[in-house]
View 1 (cartoon, rainbow, N blue to C red):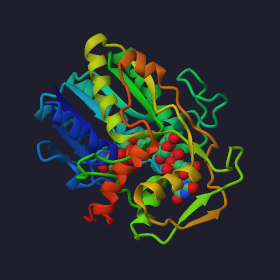
View 2: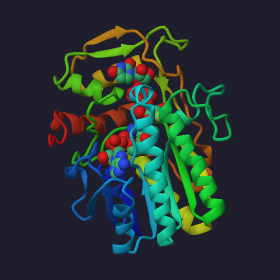
View 3: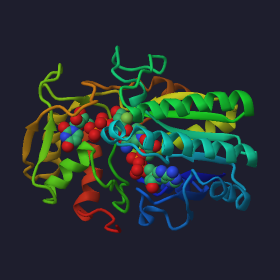
View 4: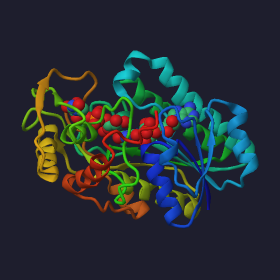
Length: 330
Ligand code: NAD
Ligand code: UFG
């Protein structure tokens, strides 16, 4: 298949591009590089640098390449920032994918896999979360992703564009080769911050709140390896080819770990001391997010291979310990 990967220079996108190429697919990457890294793009992928909101730039990619299907990772995804700049988030995340869908329709490309998020659920009423649970985002970021999901639903009805929306829980880890990994600027995710502390790039990690209604008072999350996410995207493309029907899936390991537990595991994996301070809660953090991925297991035949946080942290450590300043290209 010839697959267009929007946001393929970013963290999850670059890992998916590696996986697609390893499985013999042709890949075209479209990325503004506003957050991503040229060095993260596999050498066998064709790279277009452009912004999805630029109608002609994205249409040109379809005109110049015989694209079979699209995977869309391109978005801003900092929850806190989205609360301060909601219009920036709606502009990039909603308008960007709107332009992409327009170009797909114009080019008669009718299959898309979309990066959605656990943030579409807001404060869950049931754990583990299933896809039919209420979607009530508590921040603009989650709202933009839910808006795109709705746009996809109506684009399916009107234009026959078939989609798979993948609601990831907490993506973590790195390619086992250590060649590519997570490098966000600013970094806000827990595991990279912990490992940058272990690598001596940061002085400490701040735990945002230890007074939650959880076993040790810190937030509980479901960590899923980035290569397992990449695999799910390819399985989603295969499903679209197989039955040409739209669907939505959670992707997680189905087990929750607290912030304190993750810090302890990182100490074990790295063998390094990690200084921890406790601060007040970060706005917009639900206490516990754990996925039921049963639907993805049943319908996609997906099965995560990195089942424990230790395994996930070990791959991330291989990247952070050898790239303490990330791609170092900014
Ligand atoms: P990332 O920032 O590393 O990657 C996003 C990429 O999209 C970047 O390379 C960026 O330059 C590009 N981009 C952004 N806006 C663009 C635009 N308008 N036009 C062209 N390119 C653009 O993010 P990530 O962590 O890899 O996340 C990928 C996707 O997965 C995002 O949509 C995110 O919301 C979603 N997601 C991430 C997580 C997580 O834990 N990291 C969890 C759930 C969902
Ligand atoms: N945390 C800290 N200190 C830090 C960073 C994070 O205590 O320095 C805590 C957070 O408060 C949270 C947990 O660690 O309780 C995980 O935080 P992350 O920022 O790593 O991840 P989030 O759970 O906030 O969000 C991530 C993605 C979202 C996605 C969500 C789904 O960034 O896109 O997972 O679970 F929606």
